[in-house]
Length: 345
Ligand SMILES: [Zn+2]
Image (cartoon, rainbow, N blue to C red):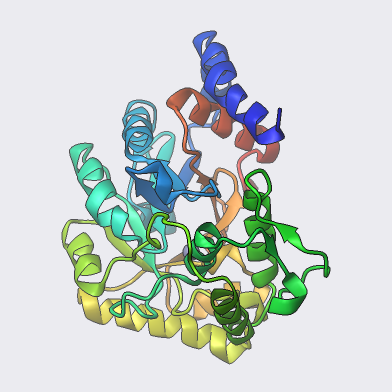
């Protein structure tokens, strides 16, 4: 029995039993009325093959629908900008406010998630990297995922490819490949963006596709981003290249923020108020840059629930698991128990 299987069994069977006993509801009722929960999604998919390594970025359409129904019943949904505007004026948020966010601008947000959001009349904010928006260019980590999914190689050699991991070969066998992908992605995030792209191109050349797998994840183009805006979805910036901003110079950080903001403002002919730090990488300098780049707020990937006094430029979020509502409640309870309400003064 593998750890991931044990975890999955717990999610499938233990969470519903504990939920049936009302244990999670009792814990969640203790959430302060003034709490502000911001949930984070990336992809909403129909086909499990689109998520070969289960890296936590995909939720099925069925789970997404169940989760939104639960939010409608138990929370007060509110748009990101509306919540920020009220806090800036010292106005209270509705009790147990909840905002929905999507990062990265995947095509399935438009084709799959948008109709579900509409059916529940829920607002959402979408943070879109602007680089290559109309070139059908995949996001760089999706190229890594696709390459390692489709390769016939059984071993990955970090030293030969220039991946900063210890020299030992990493297994791409069925029980190890998800762990290997995670290790490779974690290592690539530590490289300057241009160096990382060189390593990635080397990996693609060394490991050509031989297996038929799901196509690389597609992004929305600018027409679809505009259609989301016109459908009432708030569009936010997410940099141009989606690099690790902690590794960039202050000038590049500002350019990444301001260029992405301007591109989206021109596209939507509307102010862009929010920024999401790419992959959550941020420090005091990037927070200052976000304030100075004219945004009203910025969301991080710090796991937690916010409070009216939370720092509006490091808002915490809760990543949504690809699970039933029972297990979603377990995830929320565990975030609250671990972190309390983030930024409480
Ligand atoms: Zn992102």
